[in-house]
Structure formats: structure tokens, C-alpha cells
Length: 179
Image (cartoon, rainbow, N blue to C red; front, side, top):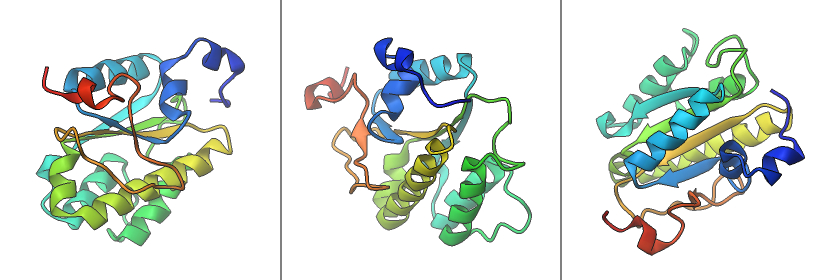
């Protein structure tokens, strides 16, 4: 998939809006996240969803992502190895993303559960994803991460030289309050 055109910006296409300011976007409302992933799927994106609440350790996170993206057997299940293999995925290597896909959307549900128990690992993984997504964009490849959190006040330090931001529907604190 080539880089975005000016039409995407003028039409305010969802994928353009999600990637315009950050490659990692937060969601509180599950139904809003599902609407976004449905739209992205219909527009040819490979949507890979992982339940972060099931991760009780950094090793669980690394194994889960490696399995979901079909990392090669030599994947070392460390953060450095994740950076290397995810960098390959972002560069459209022979694994992790279908060549015909518009782009890759990595979705973490209930990430607040993992982030509360392992804040440094959570921050580092998001940073690795953002850094590699930015590098992919330089080659006209689309990679993004959508992060679901039940905690409306969750925050992360800037990643990939960019802030982790709430989606445009839930940007205001009041819009993330219980429905």
C-alpha cells in the first residue's frame, strides 16, 4: 500500500486519523474499538488482536505476540528480539503480515491489566511498536497499534518520539466516563 494521499486527509478517513499523530492509540470503549477494527478489516488491514489480560509476565506478552505474528523459530523472546522481529514485520518480511494487506493493526485488549503489573515492559513494547511503525511509514507501509484500557485515566510516557493519545471520539475525559 502506498503512502496516504491528500484525499485521505480531506475525507478524514479513519486510518489516516488514527495514524496522523501517533502509531499507538488508546481506546476505553470496547464497542468503539470494535467499530474501528471492523472498518480497518473492511479496508484490507490485517487486524491481529491479543488479550493482554491473559499476560502475567513479560514472557507471556512476548510469546503471545510472537505466535500471533508467526515469528521465526530463532525468535529469542526478549525485548531486543521482539524489536528485531517486529522490525522485520514492519518491513513486510516473509512473516507477520500478508503481502496483500493494506497494513497491520495490532490490537491489545485490556492492556491496563498488564500495564499495571508490568509498567516498564508495557511502555517498552509500545515504544518498539511505535518506532517500527514510524520506520515502516517511511517506506509507505502502514503499521499501527490500538490499545484498549478499562482505566479511563491510563497514561504512558511519550513513545517513538510521539505521545500515546486517546482516539478522537474519547479525547476528552468526560467522553471516557462510564456509559
